[in-house]
Structure formats: structure tokens, C-alpha cells
Image 1 (tube, helix red, strand yellow):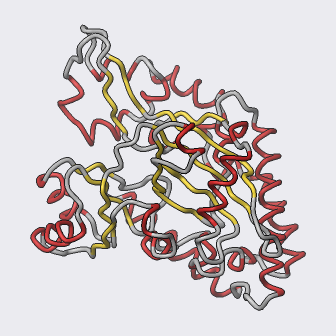
Image 2: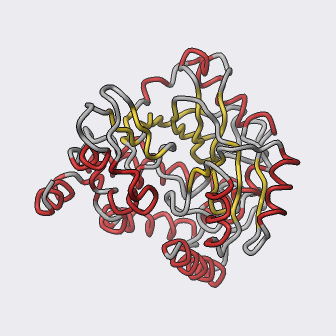
Length: 347
């Protein structure tokens, strides 16, 4: 696909617009709630046990430690510069074999997340990572969704406010086209070509058999080519009960998105065969807005609705003694996040 055609596709599909542009009108909404809260950083009180409420610079490992062990993958925390032998010993002790998932402990939109197939991949990741990162067991379940959950602190149970179903970046062979050819036929995938070439290089020149499915990004991240579908209609009584049962076991968790892998929707509604990949706090987007069939105006409406709930939860928790970040603390958080993102971009 020609560069001009790709550019036209990005311009005419708002889901590809830069974050800063999509959120321009939302900054005024944020200012409104900040004035009401008398703090630009009121979100800190939304999830009191998560650093910064889970808005920025929160540790994934610290969040996992709040979740009952049976609900998330086996996970270890690694420091930059740790020898391969030590990491391998830690993986063995934790029962983590290949394949694995490696990702920054403080992450951002899927940056530096990789599937580790073997010792060579692990060694290469260790050599590049100059940040704290996690090694997790790879959860081999076929489906992934993000469930946005909200519970007001004065309520015994919460509710699902949005569900996104994620379709992984996968190509299907025709017996004659290379993986590269198949990628270039799909504008969503073609936009990921630079990152995919960096990951796979000459393997993209291989020709899969007719009907053979090749999964190139085995996790549901919009910035890495996954297609997001609004599946909020799945939020029936049984699924809400399952999500409530899990979230009520996470201390002081009131607002955020749970990304999970699961086998079938029927089993998920029974609370079976599921694993929480990540739990995100105040910085969570209601990612069902990125459904290609939805307009930017629908997206703005959903963002405003969630900002309102974030404000109300934060204000209730503030009245119960949980403080907001000071202005200087908030500015420092933003500076730290900027530096950390630059580090991840260099990975």
C-alpha cells in the first residue's frame, strides 16, 4: 500500500489520530473538574492503594500484589543489568517456562512488550532493558477483552461501564503471499510494519500455507495493531457478577480497566478459564471507544462520562481522608513520566 494511501487512511480514521489531538476538547472538561476539586491531580484519591491512583508511573508489580494470586499470571520483577543466569533461576523458582511475556514494570501503551520464545530472546531483552521489567508466564487462551469497572466508595458493588473485545494482529496465508505481502494488504497492519520488521526481520519473508494463521502480536494492544470492538452489550448480570467478585477482592479498587484473557464467553460468565493480564487505574481509557464503527463524538461522550465518574469517586475518597496530589507532586509525576516514555521509546 502506497504511503499516500496510508496517510489518507490515518486521517480519515480518528482512531489513529495522536492522543494529544483526540483529547484537546477533553482538556477543558478536565479543567472543569479540577476547578471543582481545587486540584489538577484529584485522580490520586480514586484508587488509594495504587501509586498516583493508577494515572501515571504506577508499578504493575505493586498492582499485581493487590490481586488474589489465582487471577493473574505467574510474575517476577527484574532489575536492569541482572545476569541471565539469575533471571533464569527466578523464572524456574516461579514456575515460568517459555514462551514468556516481558514488559516494563511501568508501562505505556504497549511499549517494550515482547513475547519471549527462548533463551536467546530473553538474553536480548535483558541486554536492551534499562528499566525495571516483569517476566510473566504466557497465558495461552485465545481471546482477550478489556472490562471497564466502576464502583463508588459508598456502594457495596460496582458495575461494568464498557467492554472492548480485542482482535489480535494476525494474518492468514494464501499459499503464495509472504507474511510481508499480507501485512501490506491491510492498512491497520501496514501501519505496524516498522515495529514488526524490527521484531521479525527476514521471517516476514516466509510464505505461510493457505489457511495458515500467523499471529504477529500475541496481545491485544491498539497501538500494536489490534482491532478493538465495542462489546459493552456483553455486560449482562452473570458477567457483572464475575467481575464484581474479582474486583471486590482488590483492596480499594474503584475505577479502572481490567484486561483479561479468556477461553470462551460462556466460561467467563461462569468465572472459569480467565487470567487478568493487567489492571489499570485512573489513567485507563474506556478503550471500547476505539471501535472503528464509532464516531469521534461518541468517543468524546464516553470519555466525559468516565471523567465524571472518576471525579465523583475521587471526591468521595478525599472526604474520607485520602489526599489529592499537591501541584508540585503532580508536576514531578509528569516530568518522571516524560523521561520514562523517552526511555521506552529508545528500547
